[in-house]
Image (cartoon, rainbow, N blue to C red; front, top):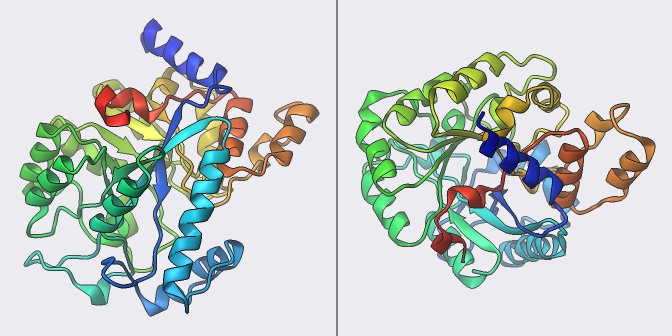
Length: 339
């Protein structure tokens, strides 16, 4: 890491009293309603995690219009109340596409349409940025890259485990070249995926992101390349190698305070040489835990984390309290994209 990168990382960690961070990993959730283009499978709707999130946010699956409004109201209130975070990238979720490039709803658990993402961002441009999702297997993937770029997207989000595509498939080279041409970062899930149902966990290996990196795409590996299985973190050597080989490789810190991913957080706090590649993210609406800080910070600092109920602020305080440096996603964007 260069001296300038180290200063940038330190400044982000030490100046968090300024409301200047952009959260690059916030999920836009919605039930199908009207023409919003969203979809959720009955099986996922009955899953324990989804039912927990509905209960936690006091949402009802039988009233989609009201539920969608309440989810957005909760997110807006929490974001605007944050002491550290000024904007959030709202993430879409594309579906499963068959070999002919057509959407297959039977194998799609959850779909948040790109049109719904852009409509929401356009309604609240002061706090939201657009992170649409494009499965490169879809027949119009390259056209959709250009459409989303023209509409103001700041990144493209994918979840290969659930969207059933291999990021290392060389047939996707034209897709990656389109991302590089439009300077759209590629935010890809890494590790195990627990939230959605249909999945191939092998597709969450960060090794599969090398093709996009070689094509010049700015790649952001979600969850700091955490494997996501409690205390087994086999991707740390891969993380180090990707940082050394590719200046266009980054990772976000979303969900690192979750018990099944916090081992990576504890690893990375011991590796300041990697922290200049870390970007701030939460994985909202998932909860933020302070468990990793127990026994590792003073009682006063821990009590401050416990008393902090704002999810964005608690993510900042737990990570900075553990001396984990990170940067704002805004540093990767052109000034016009964040103004």
